[in-house]
Image (tube, rainbow, N blue to C red; front, side, top):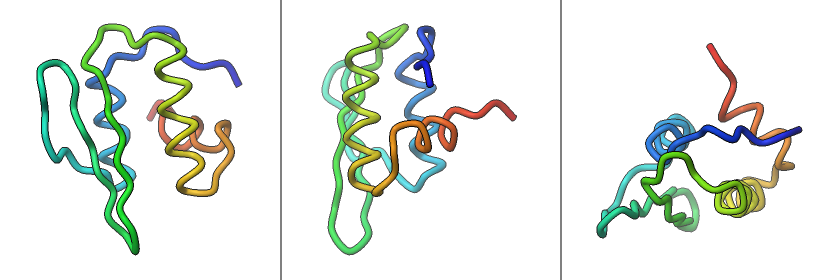
Length: 82
């Protein structure tokens, strides 16, 4: 599955919030998000418009690994258009 080329940091943050992540802090143009289950998971999302494809791929790979999903499953879950 091809990653979206026009996704902004704010859009990714909203998608991660729907998965249960919440904003824990912001430093400049970078937002740290945390997921708290048995153990904590943290990801940093830059508020860039649009996100660079490598940055987006790295964030999605990290989140997919933590939730034991493939990147394709995660993308379809996070970024589906309603």
